[in-house]
Image (cartoon, rainbow, N blue to C red):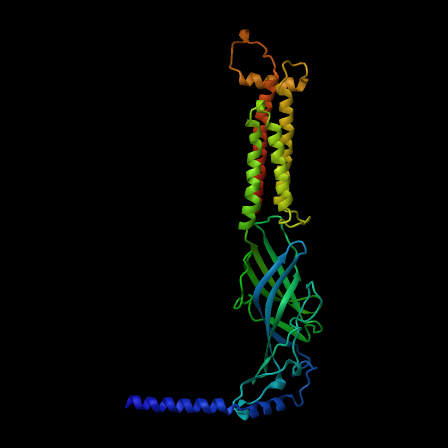
Length: 391
């Protein structure tokens, strides 16, 4: 009995549903369209009281992050903007038109709010003007208009912490021609929507807030603040690790015996290799003077130390083969004596003799100073760089 009643109720529901669906005939929609737009004027702002501003709700959808160019300071992304407002001239009673609750029409017949990207790097055109987007009208008079495209905006960059940098860009959207007394933008959400967002392999999106501001110029502006962080793995492997290898390998020249005759050639080989490497990777490092990339400054400092190592190798080779102190300057003699005094064991003062200075003694002292001095300098440079970029 219960199953039979349920079947009757189900059949009755299906019949009602079919009648409601098929009641929305083409003739009803055509009649509705004719009634709505017979006396409609799309050139006039759609407000019943023209002394009050039209409130337009805005929702920003991020579709994809395309590219970020540090040198040109531009960002490219694909976005969709959802706008909604109430047009009192487009209200109707659904029961008079076969229960038609909404219709989608050609945009050429309707007044549409147009957004402009003020900090664009392309021509100043409305967003989505190159594509026809169809708006939807609800029987309450609400107009829902989704449009979008590729947005290219100017974005000040800070590459000082490359490749561990974080960039922040702000998209500035306004309705040119309509000041606040005519049209007010209202953000439907305090964040951009990511319903259709496709992530980028090199950048992570961290922040995507939206806020409407009243500008002193008299316009209502929607600001979309985007913060994204670079994925540093590629640049770490291809630039930072080889730089560390070169820098830590270079001072080992002073461990090599002078008698081998390979000190100068090895130091020159490392210097030239690092110079060629710096030339190759410079194309991957963003070129900017304000601010300048700290990694590039560190690499230049390291190559400068490499040049000092070459000079030190040549000087050491010069002094190594001296048999007497005739060609040794007074300053070099003084520091060499101090070195020998600290190096030699403590003896009674009556047995102390002034040590004879040989070229090998000077070379030994300079090897110690250059080896530890360059290593300390390199460690300081690397430590300062990582402390700067990571904190």
